[in-house]
Image (tube, rainbow, N blue to C red; front, side, top):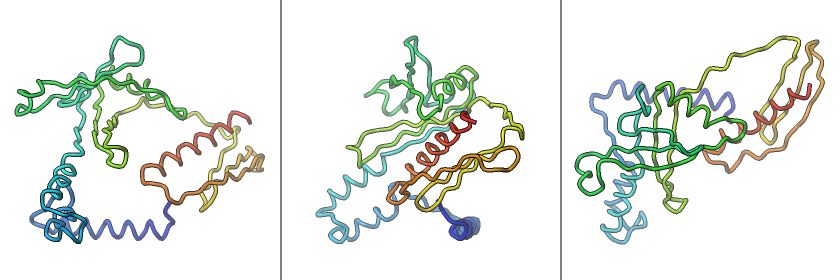
Length: 229
């Protein structure tokens, strides 16, 4: 996690970038990254033997991800829709192909998948809620090059609102993320500490996607303490 100073510097950097974009009359977008595009001018220095080798990698980079914003209608989207199947726990993703590809692949591609609950999150229940209530389902499909070029599908949607029930008689939980550990404490209603535990954890060498998952995992584990008191 970023410290206060790092967060302030990050916010300042983003504000500078935002002001620069606002003052730019013409925006430049390069799918595949500008760095890789410029690599074709210095092939050997960037690890490419020929222009053809660079071109293969360039096309791969430019076609490794696509994104479709959801819409409040049956299936939760327009080009990509999600429907439940009769089989228990099974769903179907329907991909509407553009016209230039329909002659070769057909009008639609249908993929079946299942959703399992994980780390206390009832993901299947949330997806059923979104489908049954015509909530928008945003779909992101991307390829992981470091995982044998496998394709992954991420679904994002609304979840049912859960009312918060609280009272001072229950006391409170405190969670503190430190450099090499997580401190968890339970404070009684009268302000006295009833329980305190330090959990060792190494934060370094984690990817951007792994860190939030680790935070969520330990937060959920810490919340289970509330069932004891």
